[in-house]
Image (cartoon, rainbow, N blue to C red; front, top):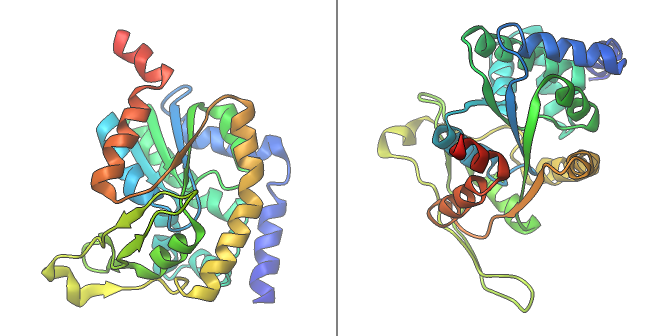
Length: 268
């Protein structure tokens, strides 16, 4: 483990310079397009970034890029980079900028080469340094900050399942919390898999309670500077999830359609 962390730290050191880090991202995004439109979805593990970002990207015709999916694919590939990532992720720690950048850069370059001009980034940026670099190379119009009560986040993370055959994501957690004096009622039915996927379900190695709680601690420590970064630029939109997909998605789409950038696009 110490060797892996030393390797990761040495790689991260290569990107200590803000200019060098931004330049790498700029090359990834702008090989085929100039100043792409970018939305970023922020939020802790288990909040539903993947669930909602996929649906929002489809609704608005954007290219969805999930940092977590790219990392998991790399870890499953058997590569040396994937092994380094897994050793870090399994502890609940955040990946160094250099490692997450490597997989993001390749995915962004592929999209740019196809002429794609709008991106919805799920799980990136995770640090203020990443946010700063991203701001330089794209028109970040929105940073949507999803939130959910802590006890539900833990339960949802533990309920996550992935079909290793088709790659679909499900959640077997069945959540109900009654309303209190200062909190609304929360009803979140499970997102059950179809029968065909049942034999192929697997749980992520880091979706155990100690690691989940550690990841949440690490996330919140790193997230505040990112939230402050986007709040200072007037692009941060907070959105609390209080129900399942049927209740939440229409409400979220209405919020997004009401953004100034979308209203201007509709007029144009």
